Length: 389
Image: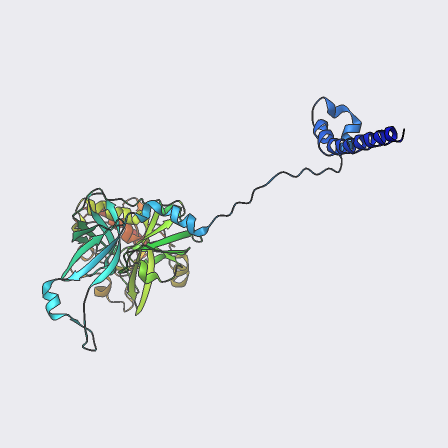
């Protein structure tokens, strides 16, 4: 009799355990689910059963490594980066190059370049290589070494081109630099060390300087590129001649530098300007750059207010001393056409001169020997001048 009672008690206990578990499952999961269906949502007791219930969805935590991301972003561009070795000819080797303290140095130099055509056209910035009495070798990402010759230097941008005796090289992809705004993340790539490995730096486009002219003087030259990006990555001297890449893996500029009033100024030439120069290099027209022959001050709103000008854009032919000969080069197309100090060039043909369209950049679209029409302001009066550049 006692055994039967014990078995019944155990059976009832098991039922209570499973029943309780079932009730919990139904209360926590089944009833809330049924209350969301069209058929069962009409029953009030199911609605109440789902009140104050928080359903937690499963989430996954994903960790991205910045180094891995940069490596993937620059993968295609990285294979187009080359190390350019400038080394002296036998004539220079025999005498060496003397410093100011009379010590002798070997003028061998490593610089960064970018492949722009698969048949071996290499681009860099002129200060990344030696240009006098030098020979060149180019080492590609796969470790192959090729002889190269200096194909030309663009006087407008300072970009230099070498032709390597190679084929089927990986070519860098250039993006639209007009899409790049200050504050955007970029990556600089270099291969300028004797270790022949790519070097990377991540940073930001700090600003766009519309007035920085590569003449390296206080005034702008009509023959020099104007308007560059400034970037904040460190050790910028290592990256001269190398590409600056956005986070889409596109080249948005080429790093360069100039000496201005004793200071070394670093900048990034926008890709859209670089592409114009590459096109001219491919066509072998680097010797057909136009010449106007003036020095000018790019007009901004601030400058217009300061000088009480009637326009807020344009190029003011200018000399701080007020001398005509220092503003308009003697025997230049500008002098022959009668341009004078104080004239404001407001347009070239149909293209107005403004912050996004500097005079020197607009002129670069022309070739030596082309005819063009300048619209100027002289003593407040608009005047048209035709000339051959």
